[in-house]
Image 1 (cartoon, helix red, strand yellow):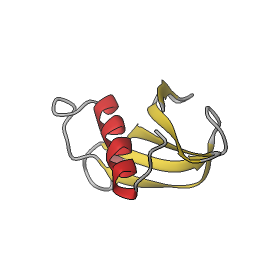
Image 2 (cartoon, helix red, strand yellow):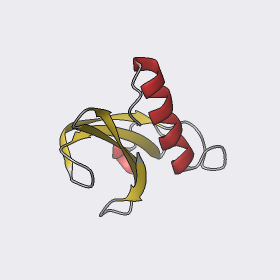
Image 3 (cartoon, helix red, strand yellow):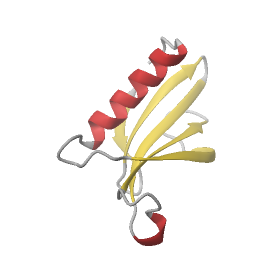
Image 4 (cartoon, helix red, strand yellow):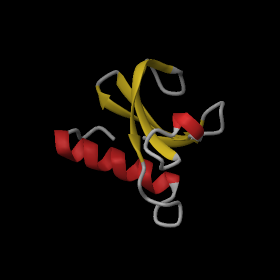
Length: 93
């Protein structure tokens, strides 16, 4: 599991979800009509072919209701991966 920034300057985390299969989650900022939940920040999750490659397929997005003072991007990403992996019994990250 590692944290980095993508080409758009968005913070992301990638992790091994199963042997040879990776996921990426990132925090995206949105304004205007793209900010459909009115939170300004969204956690997106998608499959990637390999570490540090672009997303593959459609990403799922989740509004982040925490303010930036309550939880920074790194905390949200790491907590998401840990809790998701614990919920499904994944020991890879």
